[in-house]
Image (cartoon, rainbow, N blue to C red):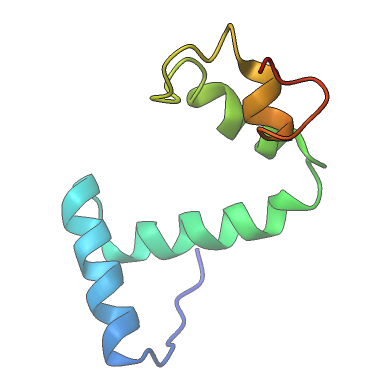
Length: 83
């Protein structure tokens, strides 16, 4: 591993410190994870979008979503929405 030094703003440092505490990881590990995520994002195409959506599946908080999904997708004025 290569050691390097970077300059952070106060708010960036506080944010990273909070993330490190929340995840019980080192500040260095949080920064490496963020860099890896950024570098691999383009290589994976849009798979990360689908994975993020899949994590939230079934948790919309909307009542009657299954029945009225067209209204939620295209709005109340849509020709697909039940009136």
